[in-house]
Image (cartoon, rainbow over all chains, first blue to last red; front, side, top):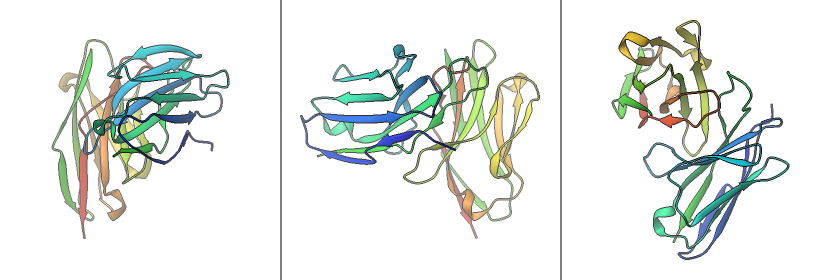
Length: 114
Length: 113
């Protein structure tokens, strides 16, 4: 079965650079979530979108922005990167209309800021 | 608001022994509860979920969990550990289907031969 696809798998950037992470949800899933997992940490919710509109916002820095496009894929844009942004970034998708629709996670993008 | 507490950041078990991972939740309304497993450098894979109905839920890889409202717990068990069970396990809660998940701190399982 198709899963959540994230690209790239690995990304190395320097301080103050920008990065764009992409997420392609499972077909027919209309909700996308972004999580950040620092080393040895649990995943922290950043932001979510339902039907291309922002549905919830967590601890996302102002330097970050995200959107969901008409084909339901999502992009997380990160500017003025800092060393502390180094983490594993997960995207998850679900079907917002179902009571039993759990989140399905991608394999993540590992961002390293040097 | 909701929160999850996992007791024990590390658990070591012998191959063939019982695996017990503890999870307690706090929620103002009936919660939806999940267990996810994360292998090194991989994403989070859903093990099992509790939404409504039967309080004992069975998941993949021989794992099961029991929702106990009176104890606000959702402990994960597996009768006999296998070397392939070595991974990090996260308990998570949400207040409604499709809402964001709040994760516990995770429990890393080490399986000894």
